[in-house]
Length: 103
Image 1 (cartoon, rainbow, N blue to C red):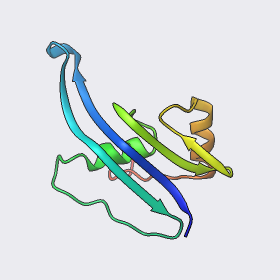
Image 2 (image 1 turned 180 degrees about the vertical axis):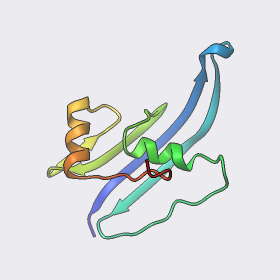
Image 3 (image 1 turned 60 degrees about the vertical axis):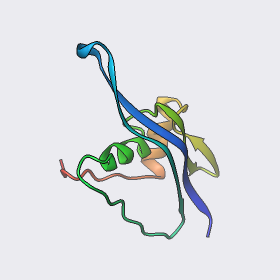
Image 4 (image 1 turned 90 degrees about the horizontal axis):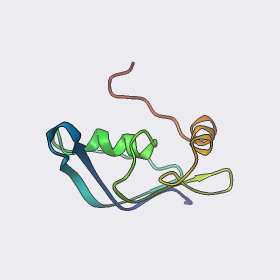
């Protein structure tokens, strides 16, 4: 199988700007690989960062550190550094996302 997506040393924290810029860490050191044809489930307790990680895989949230790359248009696209136009093209032709809230 060929690899389609990989996350390397991904971390995410949220800064509370109205609370003295305190940062709340969500997770760090996440490694993830997905091959073509695989079907996986992301599971965990409520509040453990599953939805945050999914939003990062779709480039709705940025990484505090690390990289997330998608095999798109015959090459790797690092969505942590890609331009908005490249991300929109990736979403249009390579990756879809359905929110748990189905809005």
